[in-house]
Image: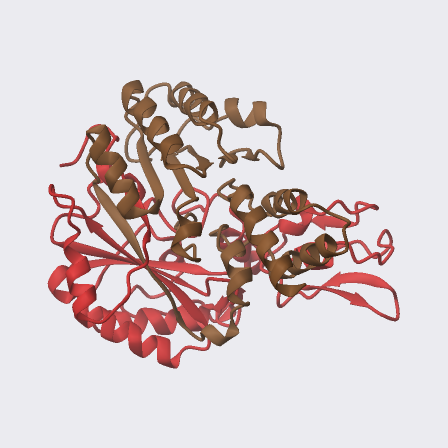
Amino acid sequence: MTHTHHRVGPIESLKKDYVVLVMASRDVKYENEGERFKKVMEVLAKHMPVNLGNMVVGNKYWRDEEEIMMRFREYGNIVHGVYIDQEQVKQVLKDLKAAELGLSVVVTGVYEDVFKMLKELGLKPHTVNLSLGVWGRKERLPPEEVLEITTMCGHCMVSPALVMKLVSEIRKGRLSPASAAVELAKECVCGVFNVKRAEDLLRRIVRSKA
Amino acid sequence: MVLIDQGRCIGCGICIPYCPRNAIKLDPNLKKAYIVAEECVECGTCARVVMCPRDAIVGVVEGYVREVRAHFSDPYTLHPSTGIPGRGTEEMKTNDVTGRFKRGEVGFAIDIGRPLVGVTFAEISRFIKVLNTVGVMWEKANPILYLLKGGLEMGEFPEELNNVKLHSAVLEFKVPIAKVRDVIEKLKYLAETTDTVFSLGIISRVDDDFTIPVIEVLRELGLEVSPWAKTNVGLGRPLVE
């Protein structure tokens, strides 16, 4: 499962995109796992994520946020928070470290920036998953500016046709870029889609196609 | 499978752009939307998200093949082999407590069909057979391997699955760092000969001085490493050093 991986775009844009994933390994039986995840969700929500998700319930643009914060399986939970600023991520990690929950935490983003944050917090990167991009018949892919948006859902649930339909609606003045980004976020059920970055990218497409 | 109830559909077409596989079409004569069964991968997006004014999208998965598609395409379907949702395993996300990837080992996560192109089981089988020639250590908990008949050495799926299309499927394995070059050669061959795409992830432990040993090997091979990566920050307990 690599659903927070392989995002594309210019480095300046990627630097405004961080996913914090917290996961309980099924190889470790954590006592009161649900309670631990409620604490995780408190931390993730406290630092103003642009998206929040729980693999039992869904994302905050599709399901009730209270349910996302409170409902978990007995074992094997996975949750996410998405942030646009390094300082937010740093505060999340600081709080998770202090909480000593024992759960695995993965930060997806520009890894040199993540390493810098870890050093400042007295943490060490344990393992990385590097992206070597897309191989094979790349001519079959949607245009790059559409991929910058759709790859923010690693399960590829965000439809390129919907991106273009919403771009058209924005250009006609029927929809704001912010509302369009939320509509796209609903398709990414896990809640790893960066709504604010999508809004910025939609604005860029609208300008370029005008 | 997910269906559009023809009795309820009014042909407004609101659902069409929501499908990430372009599997929803509008019949111009009947003025009704319908789903192309061969293209639908059972991701469930239409049933979940579209605000159909007539509630005409009906989420019903029936039969073995449709269930297999749902296991690999719908993030909210728990896979029977892993007990977690999604196409792959916990891979490096829990490596701080599982120690799945050790120092000196390099993991590969090959997401075939991603992004948005899709892949058949026949093509996944071809990838497995080519990679078997390198002698990789497959991740046995990976759900795609759970469906093989006759073992990993054969790399064959049941005949009825061969032409079935998935949104994507992840192949996961590891090798000693000395074998990375051999694997990359095979992947270059697969990239040249496939009719689809794959997204490639490379997993490595990080040294105490924050260096990533595999990066030097990848650069020697002329490969570009994205600045975007997943980092397990080592907060899991009990920690595997």
